[in-house]
Length: 378
Ligand SMILES: *[C@@H]1O[C@H](CO)[C@@H](O)[C@H](O)[C@H]1NC(C)=O
Ligand SMILES: *[C@@H]1O[C@H](CO)[C@@H](O)[C@H](O)[C@H]1NC(C)=O
View 1 (cartoon, rainbow, N blue to C red):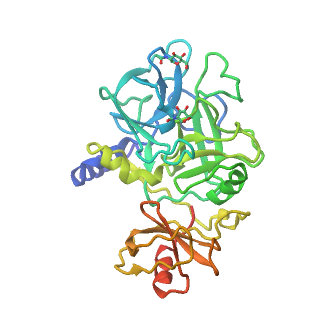
View 2: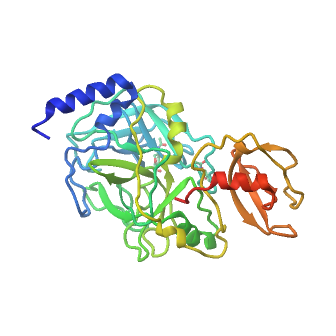
């Protein structure tokens, strides 16, 4: 590194010329003070320089967040039912005593995801615009975000940081130093199988992490904080702490908003100095594909591209929730098989707007669409 600063600078300049928004990629996800391989409990100062602490106007900490460029912090939508005028702290290490590397900002705009569902916690993501820009230091730096085509196979190591309770109802001991835990990604099928019997749905907009034996997890008060994974020398945010059943309980992984689902939403809301998006790639076959349980849809394929076929779907009259319209194939987001109210096995298509409708799996056009939607579960 030290021997080739000229090369690096030239490359950097070219990238900046090529596209202004790439500037975040220069700085994001590269903490100068994180050389850690294995984690302890207390995070060393500066190890997670994107970590934000959100407080209400009387100083009470209510959520975490992550810095994604000099003006914006990302957090969970459920953090904002009533809280007005939050104060954001960056560069904070301890919740008690002074923090010499810290700055604070008020928030000029709160953007909750418009499709946030307070019951299912689907789309549990929000953006906070800081009242004024922060300057990056060794202790204050943005995180890179997982780009739309990222994959996180079961077992991918991730780290979660926060000042939340350490067990249900037990708050952090003084001086309340930022905590870090490493948790493996569980895979959505596996996670669905854990939560479905408890009446919670795991959607494509979520990503889960935890150990089968429990013991390490995010907990109350960590909400909105980042779940990150390292690729090469760069840290990439995969999730936003959203919910769980209990904390660190065996069989219940933590559930996070899946950041890679929101690249286009984030880029429509932050139009200048856009956050750095990095494609995180898992290699090999995802072990989660073999997870199975009752209730798990036999086949739900993730859309891995934008369907463009002009073909139309003929909707079969086999279901009570028949959608009586001709719908362009490009509007179909995903499909699954069902026996629901049908004399024979049917396919349920879900449109981009979330409308479900029946289709005949023996129909050639239907088959074409299913084939187009083929892609791996993440
Ligand atoms: C801040 O949060 C605490 C704890 O929930 C609450 O008691 C206090 O009233 C809140 N302050 C404001 C201004 O909302
Ligand atoms: C979610 O719903 C609960 C219960 O109805 C309510 O107390 C809470 O304020 C809601 N939260 C948000 C973020 O809307």
